[in-house]
Image 1 (cartoon, rainbow, N blue to C red):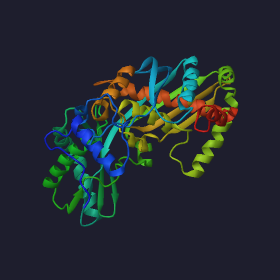
Image 2 (image 1 turned 135 degrees about the vertical axis):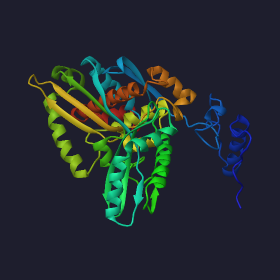
Image 3 (image 1 turned 90 degrees about the horizontal axis):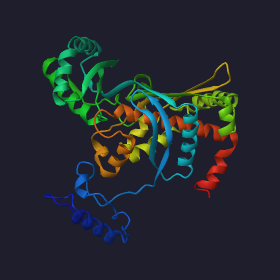
Image 4 (image 1 turned 120 degrees about the vertical axis):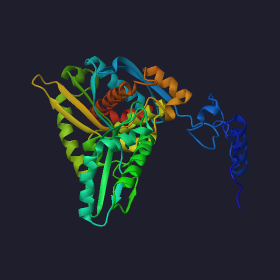
Length: 388
């Protein structure tokens, strides 16, 4: 039987244990971990974020900006840290940031906020499940009170209901303060479901998640009803500025957008834009977000128009941006530095971060769309990227 990875039940988050595990796996695989083991953080700070700690994955980080953001929570010029290994990405986002800033900045609005857990209850038949749904609506206040006993910052906003066969799916929608909130709403919903099961007769069984919360999976339900923050970033760019900075025109971009909408529809894409996942992922890594949430956060709806003066209006709606400025990976030292750089560390800052990310994504969209039309897409990768 293979040897188990070394652990210390008393203090597993120490440099001694990290070194012991590096030595263990180096011996087993004849592989050097010199770079993995070279870091500045104290292993003790990783408790709650990782198990079997051996070191760090070092991702190159670049800076984008100044990026002008006209938000309700983020206002002014920002320098955005982005961690990526994709050449040309930072250069492209910088080009877009310059264009947005020279156009007066990106106007960004958080229009909705909800995090879900979606249990399913099983009954003898569809009528029993329907009657249960009526009871849930009538007893919402008590269900919310039970759920909120587990959290000081989470609030149950509403419960959506969906019927199928003898099943009743309940989609609990919470606000979660500055935390992303998946664990928070899971615990709150469990307590609420236990109270429901104890107070409503006829429930055969329930599951805490019936998969309608689509945790770390994209869904059309999230696109319509929001998961995390629903963020809209928009800008109107003068046509002459597009010509000067991007070597393209409002008319050309608008026509290309019409073609891309058809292509995205035919492909069944959950994103009608160019590449919002690039910017979101890079900022997520830098600021300590749960990167797997990009599966949901990458959904986007692009809308474009040309005004009567020939200027280009562009907006991106991100319906499921899951971010935090408190808890999880945001407490790690490197990520704290990046959040501080943005003025987004701690309580009361999550909508500010969401607005900055929205503006960043918009910068990337206009830059890549313009590059494709101007013929700069391939040449820039040849000059700066992996093809050099």
